[in-house]
Image (cartoon, rainbow, N blue to C red; front, side, top):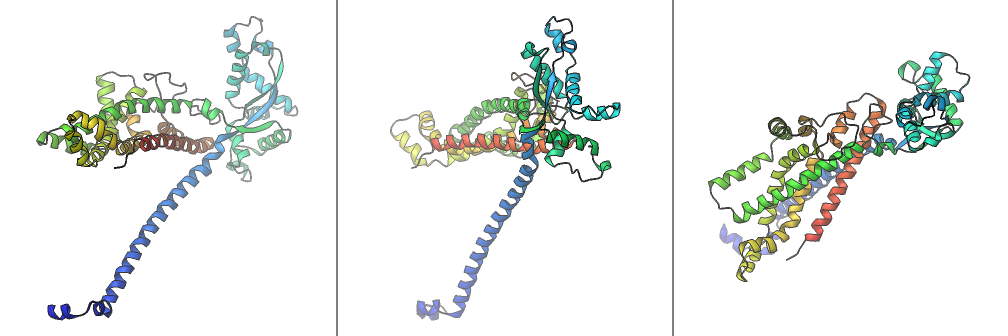
Length: 436
């Protein structure tokens, strides 16, 4: 049989029906494999598009908000009856009554007490705080009239945005037909203004959707990630360099490597339990503080950075090390001057993955108390704080329709924050890239 095949001309073998059939099957299998890859990519992109469309479709309206434009009389009898201009007296005045009086002046026909209560429910609870801040900043407003913009209550804002269907029966929505008619009259009079929702970025959290903002969460996330970066990057890179370049190959280093690989697969909530037991209970560190959250997230991201760092160091060709040693460089100089700069792009890739993981984590931070209701912006690493993922978690649990759009808007801000961080990391990685 071997002699027959060896004596057969190659052209005859290639032209045989059996060989041509096998060749067609192989090409068909390759085409199917390529098609499976294209379909997989298409499905992934389609699911991503559906996810982003859902988030943006629900959240883009949160970046705009309707305000009431009313002429408010800063009644001195209400604000400062004695004319003392004492800041304590001015701060304790009933500014909500000024806003209600201004709105009732637009609807003089509303006289019954119940109807007036329904009418004034259109004014947000934050109107009194904003009017008070205006007077504190400029006491000369006392005794004058001024056209001001005050926040509209969330339910009416949602009606104007179309998120509450006004065609539903009155019993199926929180806003009555009479209140919708009042809103329409204000719109016709030009006394409802739609503009950019600056409160979303200037305010902290609030029980009222129209006043709730992301400032405390943004600052808390920034402080927490600063602690995470400050601990995870130098410790992770140093550990990777030591294990890959200097550590002796023995059972102890093998055990360390196995444990690092295992830690990369540990559920994140375990690190939260570690932070609760060690940092809060044993070390008595401040609860719900960015410094504790940053340490917990640093512990969680260290295995990822170490594993990626070791892989990047291992990818540097041995000839680089041999050439450096050949010209008289010490082992430390070989690593710091030659190997580490060449491995830096791969190390930064691990840092990007680790920071993205840390930025989106909620479970470990819940265990150390960062689920607290935080209104004030943290001023330092030891102040009570929250982070964007936790704030999203809390808003998603709120039943008000206004928090639905704010939840999606917060996710959009979180994604933008993450993309910005990744863009900086990619830029740095490009700066360190070398070709050999």
